[in-house]
Image: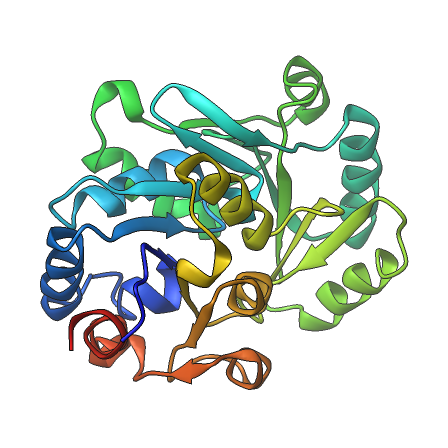
Length: 274
């Protein structure tokens, strides 16, 4: 058993099951790892306070790497913030509008969109559980451009939803394929996330471990989707969930059970507690 000092865990499809509940076995195993002095970082494509919420359900102090690694904060210290320029946001919005698809534009703790929230209802559910000081600011407006301009430099990504039109989603992704300054990743087959080039969960982990004074070899990263690939490759021990994509499994050092069978707990026990 190696001397790991940090476990970085994706949320959707990894930490919690398909009903968005953290299996009790995951909680127990991570509490045991924490008691041994191993830090845990919720490492998610979602916003910072969403990570704070789900980290809090584990019953001990966790860290958060948010927005696919674009935003990392410890206490009041922002370790990493890599957003889209306002010109990039407008370019992205123009292509999304042309596609006819629905999108959210996310800052570190703000969601902006036009029309019904749709797949963003997870944030509404999160706000029901978060304290007033931690609630996610949700702005729904028919006129997005003034709201985006007010947050110039703060927008970290756009997430676009297929809403049943996977062909349109694929065409939009293709439109950004060779972009010099933007990347596209997916956290499921039903969405794409448009982010600044160079942003990844690996870069977020890099900022955090620099702060903690540890090396990549002392990190375990656990995930299931395309946006987890960089951290799976970066960490000393990359763990793929049993429900992970084929690409994630191919990149991983170890494959655990599925999110519905507490695969996180099984990996933590194997790698940190045995």
